[in-house]
Length: 330
Ligand code: HEC
Ligand code: HEC
Ligand code: HEC
Ligand code: HEC
Ligand code: HEC
Ligand code: HEC
Ligand code: HEC
Image (cartoon, rainbow, N blue to C red):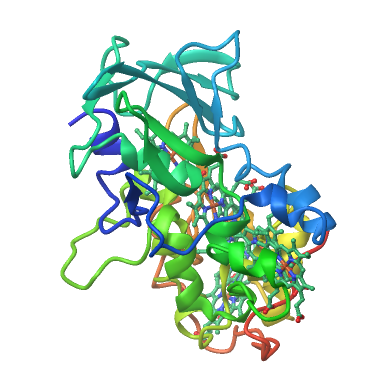
C-alpha cells in the first residue's frame, strides 16, 4: 500500500487517535488552546510557537499546492486536499528542503497522488490530522475535517487545560517533567511511535523505522540500563526548536558517560556522529538513529555487539535523580 499506508501509518500500530468529536459533548475534558496560556506562561508560549511542533500543520499558502500543508519544512512538506464527501487525497509531490524542490511523496510510486477514505480505520486521513494538530477533531456539515488547533501545542503534552486556565492554582495540568523514561516514551510515542509489543516483529533495521525515535531509544542499552532516567528530555527541550548544535548532545551523553576511554581519537567528533549515526532514507530525508550503540562506519543500522573488551569501560555516573537531566539550554 503506497502513501499513508506504508510510510506514515504502516509501521505505526496502536497510535493515539483523539476521539473524534462530532458534536461537543460535555463529558470530554475541554481544551483552551495555546493562546489562552500566553499571558501567564510567556516564555514557554514564545519559544514553543517557533518549534517544528507548532508548525507541523498549516493551511497551504498561495504559493503551495493543495489545501493543507503537513510538516514544518525542517525536512519536508506534504500536501493534502479534500476530494469529495468521503475522500481526501495526499498529493503525489512533496516539497523537500534538501533540494528546495518538489519530488515524489514518500511511499508514492507516481505523482498522481493517493486517495484515502476519510474514515478508513487503518489508513484514514483523519490520522494525519490527529498527529499533526491539538485538541479534538471536528467534522463540519459537509464532512470536512476541522482540527481545533493546527500543529502540536501545549495541550498535546499537558492535557486539556481549560480548567487550569479558569483556576490555575487548584486545577493543575499534567507535567510530563515528572515522568520517567518509559512514561515519556509512551507520551511522545503516541505520535513518534512507541515501543513494539513482544509479539510484534518490527524490523529495527528497516531504515524507515529511524523516524520512530521512542521505538529505537527503548532498545538501547543506555535506556535499558539507566532505570528510567534516560528520557527524550535528557537531550531535547520540549518548548524549543530542535537543537542542531552537537555540543549540547555531547553534554547530555557526558552526564552519564563522563570519562569514556576510546581506542581511537574521538576528540573532534560529536558523540552522536558515531553512536547515533544519521540514517539516510533517500536524497531528501535523514534521521538520527536513536538506537544508541557502537556502529561500524559503513552501517548506520546494525549496532555491533562484538566490540566489547575488558577494561575499556568509562565510568557511568549516576544521573540526577529528578526523573531526567535538566533540559539542555542553548
Ligand atoms: C491565569 C494564569 C494562567 C494561565 C492562563 C495558564 N496558567 Fe499554567 N500555571 C499558572 C500558575 C499560577 C501555575 C503554578 C501553579 C502552582 O504552582 O500552584 C501554573 C502551572 C502550570 C504548569 C505546571 C504544573 C505542575 O504541576 O508542575 C503547567 C504545565 C501549566 N501551568 C500549563 C499551562 C497551560 C498548558 C496553559 C494554557 C492551556 C496554562 N498553563 C494557562 C497560571 C496560568
Ligand atoms: C501529537 C503528536 C506528537 C506528540 C505527542 C509529540 N510529537 Fe514531536 N513531533 C510531532 C510532529 C508531527 C513533528 C513533526 C514536525 C515537523 O514537521 O517537523 C514532531 C517533531 C518533533 C521534533 C523535531 C522538530 C522540532 O523542532 O520540534 C522533536 C525533537 C520532537 N518532535 C520531540 C518530541 C518529544 C520529546 C515529545 C514528547 C515530550 C513529542 N515530540 C511529542 C508530533 C508529536
Ligand atoms: C502516528 C502519528 C502520525 C501520523 C498518523 C502522521 N504523522 Fe506525519 N509526522 C509524525 C511525526 C511524529 C513526525 C516527525 C517525524 C520526525 O521528524 O522524526 C511527522 C512528520 C511529518 C512530515 C515531515 C517530514 C518527515 O517525514 O519528518 C510530514 C510531511 C508529514 N509528517 C506528513 C504526514 C501526512 C501527510 C500524514 C497522513 C498521510 C501523516 N504525516 C500522518 C506523526 C504522524
Ligand atoms: C512536546 C510536549 C510539550 C509541549 C508541546 C509543551 N510542553 Fe510544557 N512541558 C513539557 C515538559 C516535558 C515539561 C517538563 C520539563 C520542562 O520544564 O522542560 C513541561 C513543563 C512546562 C511548564 C512547567 C515549567 C516549570 O518551570 O516547571 C509549563 C508552565 C509549561 N510546560 C507550559 C507550556 C505551554 C504554555 C505550552 C504551549 C505554549 C507548552 N508547555 C507546550 C512538555 C511540553
Ligand atoms: C541517563 C544516562 C545515560 C545517558 C544520558 C547516555 N547513556 Fe549511554 N549508557 C548508559 C548506561 C547505563 C549504559 C550501559 C552501561 C553498561 O552496560 O555497563 C550505556 C551504554 C552505552 C554504550 C554501550 C552500548 C552497547 O550497546 O553496549 C554506548 C556506546 C553509549 N552508552 C553511548 C552514549 C552516548 C553517545 C550518549 C549520548 C548520545 C549516551 N550514551 C547517553 C547511560 C546513559
Ligand atoms: C541521548 C540523546 C537523545 C535522546 C535521549 C533523544 N534524542 Fe532525539 N535526537 C538526538 C540527536 C543527536 C538528534 C539529531 C539532531 C540534529 O539533527 O542535529 C535527534 C533528533 C531528533 C528528532 C529529529 C529527527 C531525527 O530523528 O533526526 C526527533 C523528532 C527526535 N530526536 C525525537 C526524540 C524523541 C521523541 C525522543 C524520546 C523517545 C528522543 N528524541 C530522545 C538525541 C537524542
Ligand atoms: C569516531 C567515532 C566515535 C566518537 C566520536 C565517539 N565514540 Fe564512543 N565509541 C566508539 C567506538 C568505535 C567504540 C567501541 C570501541 C572503543 O571503545 O573504542 C566506542 C565506545 C563507547 C562507549 C562504550 C565504552 C565501554 O567500554 O562501555 C561509550 C560509553 C562511548 N563510546 C561513549 C561516547 C561518548 C560519550 C562520546 C562523546 C564524548 C563518544 N563515545 C564519541 C566510537 C566513537
